[in-house]
Image 1 (cartoon, rainbow, N blue to C red):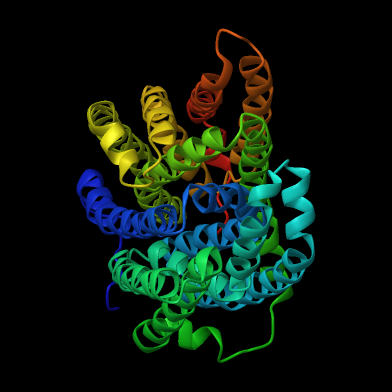
Image 2: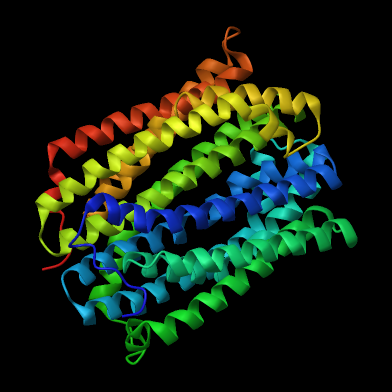
Length: 447
């Protein structure tokens, strides 16, 4: 079939790189457009608007966390059924997964319209940022259904070994988003609302393009909806596998939201610096997520095929690639961190604080990468509950360490970045222990 890749044969390192590079490029382009979105707001509207968009960031992803987790579960099931050669199973996963994702997105969109402002106030968002943050959050989340459809289709394609088409669609929608940003923010002067509207319209376009491609080029999608009636057993399996992944995301974003409240107590400059470093860390995380999606697809297909020795070979190749990526990224941000932050916002105080913050985070990039690779490996094997527990532990330790370190006069505001790095390290070490324990061997979802 066009664009699909059987990862049960061939060099694990070459397969991972061949899959990961397009996924990383797509993720980086997507994150660069988000950075461009922030930069356009920061430079054309002002530092206050830049900070407002940042204050809304973690709450936005809290609302999106559940269906993002569901599409992860759909990808895992797709990869294992595909690796096992079960075509009807792949079609059933696509059909039933679509029902679950769209229902979740519809419910979360309605909740977001009512709860955005109360949540922002509960997180201690300063009054001078509230109006812009609430407007951005509502307009962005109005497009959740299109985002859900796009993410789910992307995840199925990647599970089938096709990372190139999602990359091309992301590149197109990202440039569309930047163009609309410039139009709405700089020409029509719509401020943060214009930036959110640009993102929503771009996601709708991406969803349409992805679904058109999938139904024309991938027979599994056509086969999926020849029987529109839901399959109860597959619905239950999808929910059972997806809920831990969704809960995992909720833990991550909830801890980020609590950390945002702590950051808010340090004032607008700290909020702006945290926004800049958070967006940069998100960019870096999505590089690791590109590799992680390759690891999950490789692991899922080979677990489905019952080839456990090959699964371990893939884990070793992923470890080497993670180390190489981490050394490159840490070096870059230690050398050019301040210049990079200056691209996002033109406020000197924010840039200086953010540059120091990203250098601290850079010391822990290897931990972030190892954590992501191990989570994707375990999830691809079907061991989805452990990454959820591990993320919950990461969230709790992140909050606890933040309260301790930011309250300590020796660490102060620097505790914001130290605590995140330490939480990544602890989560990575515990996930590594889980890998060597070998529990994942008994978590196969097919056969």
